[in-house]
Image (cartoon, rainbow, N blue to C red; front, side, top):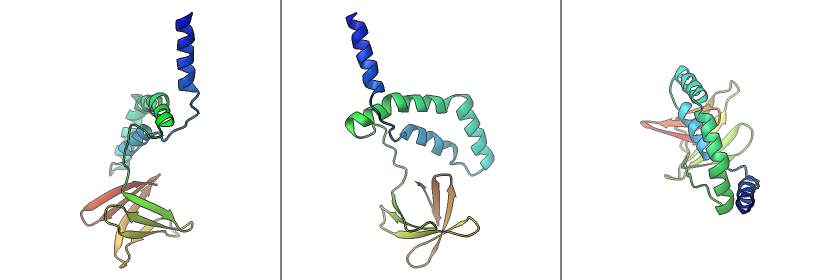
Length: 148
């Protein structure tokens, strides 16, 4: 009887955290399958992640373990740095993207046709592409991806 009570208390303590957490593992799986150049490769990797149940496994581990730990210690044990940038939304069409590494600030603008343009303070254009919640910036040989 004592084991049953302890087991029930342990199960309830895991379930009663009320924490939705940051789901870092799920985000890592999403970034993995959306980080390919070809949309066909993206789709194939997505189907593999769903059929093999990579998404289901990462959701289960995130929900039961990482998010519960994040609730109790106030930080996720799985720290995935998605970007070294701070994004500040100015209005519906404009945001400032500041690189934490270099301190350079870029202006990101959404055009009327749905494309994006990005430029630094001197007006130099940077290639920017947004896919879902991922912003990919390319300047010269350097490419960075930021989670919006």
